[in-house]
Image (cartoon, rainbow, N blue to C red; front, side, top):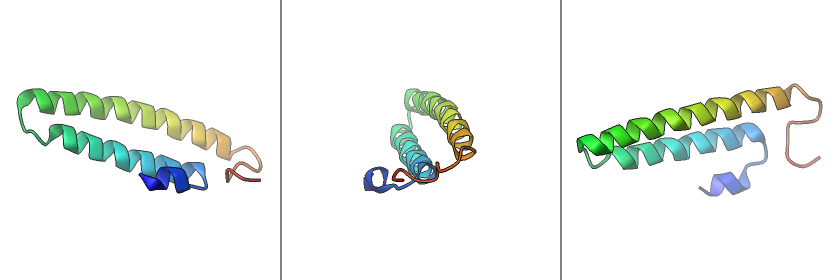
Length: 72
């Protein structure tokens, strides 16, 4: 979780968000009941949709000049 605050570029922020999201899905599904597994799948699909949108935005930003880091 500290990597979210220590990240110096948008791609590493994306990777960290993915890892946190996958950990949340695993914790949701850990109970093993049917309701928990359905909720984990819904959360996973929602997270993947948001992640793909974020990755597309990062790819578009990286095509702009001088967009590789937070600080200039």
